[in-house]
Length: 198
Image 1: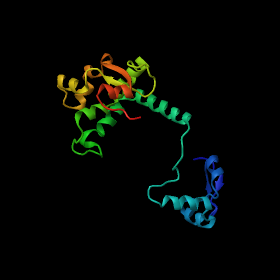
Image 2: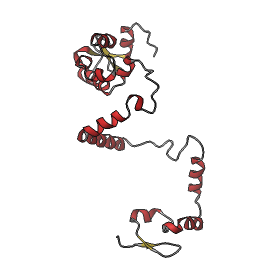
Image 3: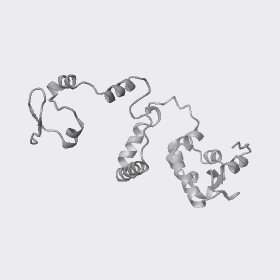
Image 4: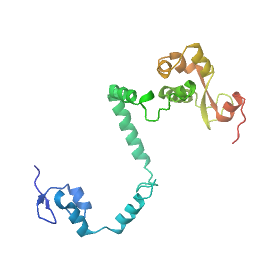
């Protein structure tokens, strides 16, 4: 048990609180007298505003808060390191929320093509193609770059007899970098016969 460093403001019971906690609170109370201590201390104007905001549906005290880039990078690196160190847990976690076990499952309403395009493997393939080329291979632009399948994805799915996402993950032909080229968005629209509106 830690050495007490404060006491309850109601009954005087010796308590331990972290120094960082003591610096933030207006009173220290044991569990039995917490409500009484809160009533005695009252509610500050800042707390009242936060409580009022919290009662409005769809709002919370962090609305509009923007994380710093360093914080985002640190969290990203930490998550990548954890995933690399625990591949079995990552796989188990994904299996637990896949298909009809996911809370947004709607009976398999999405098409296979769309489902494959949402795979992590597809995102990695697109990033690898763009990193390899670095610019649009048609016009040389470096703005709004996208990855284009030379042999259409629908053809690859049909030729390789893919019927679900697990088969798509295990099919090397789908993730072959030689079947990809980097193009800018206007050129990509042009390839597929669509009109690009900036």
